[in-house]
Length: 496
Image (cartoon, rainbow, N blue to C red; front, side, top):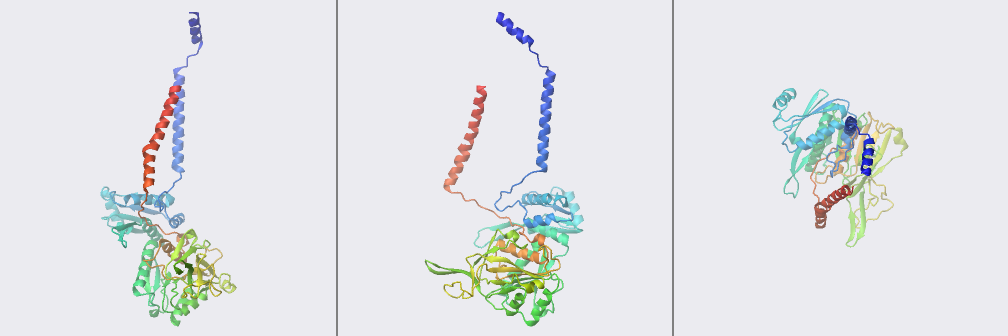
């Protein structure tokens, strides 16, 4: 009894905590927790990190578009008028949100479903004077309007030896081109020289069509030009393209080209066919530090089946020029035959004329420029071009010390290969190179980068062993880990 009374005595001496104090303590903890939670959410909303894990970076804008948006100085409103059940609605919404996010306050977005928001759709019809029957993207800015129908965003083609049509999503191509058109107003114009036997009529038409397709994305038009019918390059020409000419320029035509390039802001894109001699054109190029050697860039070796010659060239892009900086990590395969270019990189006479020559594409180290290319097993000799073997070069007349400054300069790109625009042989990196070259030639350095991407489908190949590993991982290992952690928590609580 004495022990019990002693315990009671000690219990009576303990202070009993007040309920009000406990309540206030809990309330303060909850308030602090809410404040911390709200602060973390606010910081997460304002400052976050994104990662695009798709194989082709489908949810990341290309560098050329990002560069353009950084320098955008006019407000643009993008209105998506696609029904929510459209097969491209999800991709388009995500893409437009990327424009809004990277365009900061210059890009405003709106999403209108013509089937659900009928009044707003009718208002857009009256404001822009556009049909919304198939849906599309409406761009407005700088006092201009551009409507991109759904057919220009998603197109389907049947590829060779394919059972189904392949769908290509080109939302970024269309939107970037449309915004360029709003800002610049009228489209630039390139003329392609015809009537010089460039491979054949079908190939010439394909080259023009390939350029027109690229122009639709980069906001320029393409028209044929027969120099024999003209006294001068048209005044509205932003640039001239000479693609794989088989017949040389006449003296009169050469004078037209020389007069054009001597003016300010002239642009020439020349693709040479090494199988045909064009001495006047070669002389014109040589006068600006680019001499076509008339050889063949190749790689030859002895194999177990005999001598082997490879004319398809693996090219490496220069890291030192605006045209190819964004492609420096890529490799291009040049089909057909290519000739090397002898470049006068450090020529004092050219420097006095303010002419700067820079290499754009060099062949990989195992290739060389062979003059005796018809031999069964060519061997690099003294007369042959040794590495670095230049295949493409840029020329700038009236160039400033800074490559990014050349508003009044005349620019030219020369490629020792005639098949860059061939649709059967064209690769994505070749298309990017042509696009970057044309943009650089017309003083669009901000767009001389990677062209907007096409979205395709990818298939993951899983072996039988990988399939079994995934099964054991998802069916047993991951549930087992969760079960084990739950058991440890239960055991810890039971022990306490």
